[in-house]
Length: 319
Image 1 (cartoon, rainbow, N blue to C red):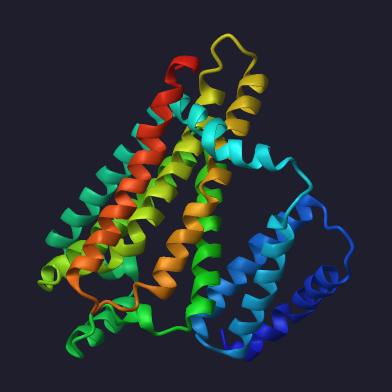
Image 2 (cartoon, rainbow, N blue to C red):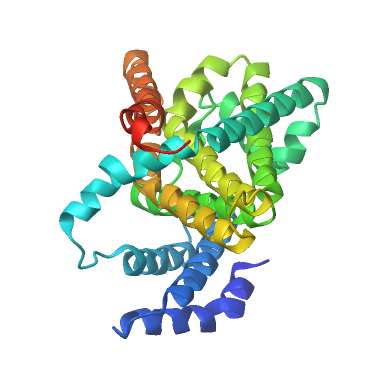
């Protein structure tokens, strides 16, 4: 679709959103969610089709406004805000260890399938990543900048676009759990296939180590958080399938509440990953030692907070 046609088709809706956000009138939660999803979808399309255009900048500006509207500070007890991450979420993580394990297993299996598929079918990588991305990457490899895509956009625009997209993917992975966990499993499987195919493509070009220590600068936190959001979706889906002694509705309600807590707890990690990808990953030529420190440090942060730290609350939490 041409940019002019895209703008003409959607401008009235965008102006309506802008007028609503500028009015100062409180926006209902459901409406905020609707605006957020539609704007991030439009922004993602614009960034793909019309990179660095006025349309993309305009949509990024609107997306920033709705993001601020959703996450602006509320008048809550400050200690409650702190204890959510220091105690409430870690306690919850002890009850989610099984769906977390399942989520990582699904993602890992899918990554292995994606890798094997690329090794055995030269056309598979184009099917998964698209001709445009593959051709661009091949051109960058010839220029000696195989991962130059990370330096193509402005830092701030890239930060908002990436962070919004990752949050959208996490909510999709969680919400898909309502389809009896099958939807979440599909989201995890699809993303795992893409990751496995991506790294195997660079392996075939003898660039595996370089790609790992560039992509995983941000990918360690980003991919882990997406998988954990999938665990929240699996937990909700399993609550519907296996209500135990509760009614199916009460079990679903509790599963959804627990899953949403985990997804909300992942927001700071998506912000960190978005910051690294936008402001750090573009400097792929930095010394290997610095890259290794960032990757290992990110891995330790995920392992410590989501798997080790919760153990101190294990005895007071049901399994």
